[in-house]
Length: 625
Image (cartoon, rainbow, N blue to C red; front, side):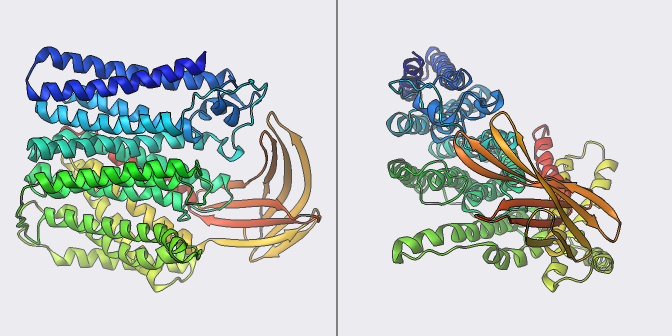
C-alpha cells in the first residue's frame, strides 16, 4: 500500500513537472493571466505531492514498514525514533528524494516571491528549474526508487550505519542540501536572464536573497559536518581534506565569490557576465559533488552509493547541463567593457573572487587528480593536507590583507589610500604576534605571517565595528560580523595547528604513561548494555603536572548488532583554552589497546568563529538594501 502511494506520488509530481514546462512555454508565447494562475496552482500541486512523497517515506521509517526495501536496508525496530526519521535521508534513495523536494520548494517560492519581476524571466526560470526537477525525478524512478517493495516482507530491518546515528549528522545533510540544491534556482535564473535580457540591478535583486540563503545553509552544513567528523570519526581535527569534504567546499568557494559579485552588479550595474558564470558554476559544482559522492569513484566514510549505473546517469545529466548552460551563455551574452579604477571597491571584490577561484582550483586538483591518475595509469595516490597547506596557506596571507583594506575603499574611484594607518596596524599586529610567541613559544615564519595577517584583519574589523555602531543604520554590520568571524577562524586555526599535541600509545589495563608535562593512567574497563549497542568503556585519569588538575576520560568502543559494526567514540573534555581528546581501539588478539591522545588548542573558538561567519550572512538576509 505504502509502496503504491509513494510511486504514485512520484509519478504525479513528474507529470505535473511536464505540465508546468508545457503551460509555461504556452504562456511565454502569449500573455494570459488565467494561464498564469494555472501555472501557480500547478506549482503548488507539485510542491504538495513532492512533500507527500517524502512524508510517506518518513512514515515508512517511523512505522518500521519493512515492505519497502529502502526501509529494510536502513532501519531497525530498536532504533530510537530520532534516528529512524534521520534514516530517511541517511541513504542514497532518501537523500535524493530530499534533494528533489528542495528543488521543488525553491522553484515554487521563486515563482511566488518574484511577482514584481519580468514575467518572461520568471517563466523561463520555471521552465529550466523544472527540466532539472524532471531529470532528478527520472533518476529517482529509474535507478533509485525509495518505494520499491520487497516480498516476502521481512520481520526486521538491517539497521542504519552506526556512524550515521548521531544528532549532528542527522541535520547535516538537510542543511547542506539547501545550500547545494538552492543554487539551482539562480542557475535557472541566470539562463533565463540571458534569454530574456533581464539583467542589471533587477537581476541582482532577483537572486541575491537566494544566494544568501544557499550560502548560509551550506556554511552551516559544512560546519556541522566538520564538528561531527571531529568527535565521531576519531580524526581529532576541524578539517581533513577528505574528498567528500572537498565536494561540499568547492561550490562554497563559488557561492562566496558570487555573493560579493552580486553586490557589484547591484550597486554599479557591471560584471553581469561574470555573475552569470558564477551562477552557472555553483550548481554545476554542486552536481559534480553529487556525482563524486554517488558514483562510487571516491572512497570515503561519507559516500552514499557505489552503483556505476547511478554514476553514469549523473555524469550524462551533468554533461548535458554543462554543455546546455554554456551554449546559452555564449549564444545570448552581450559584450561588456570593464573600466575599473585600481583604487575602487569593484576591483577589490574581483580580487576577492580571484582568491576564491584559486582556492577552488587547488581543491579541484587535489580531489580529482588522484582519480584521473588511477584511470590513466592504474596507480593510486593520496593527496592530503601537505598538498593543500603548501598551496593555500601562503595565499591566505595576502587574502587577509585585502579583506582588511577592501571594505574601506569607495565605489568607482577612491581618492587616496592612506598607507600610514595600514603600516601602524601591521606593526601593532606584529607586536601582538611576538606577545603570543612569548607565552606559547616560537613557530615557523609562515605561521608568523598567517597570525600577523589574521590579527591585522581582526584589528581593522573591530575598528569598522566601532565605526558601525557610531553610524546608526550602517548597512555594513553583517559584512563586519562575517569578516570578524573569518579573521578569528584563521587566527585560531594557526594557533591550533602549531601548538596542538598528539601522542599514540599501546596500553593495557593498569598501565601508566608519562609524556611532556602530562600523565595518563589506564584504570579499568567496563561494559554497558544500551538500547541498540553494547559499549566497552575505558576509564582513564589524565593529569596535567603543571596545574595539578586531574580529569576523567571515558572513550568507548561500541558494538552494534544491526548491522554488526564496531565504532570508536572519542572522550572529549572541552575548555576555553583547549580540548583534551582521547580515543581507544582494540589491538587484535592481545590485551593491549591503541590509545590516541590529543591536546587541541582553542577548538571551541574555531567552531564559534565559523558560526560567527554564518551569522553575518544570516543578518544580511534582513538588510533592506
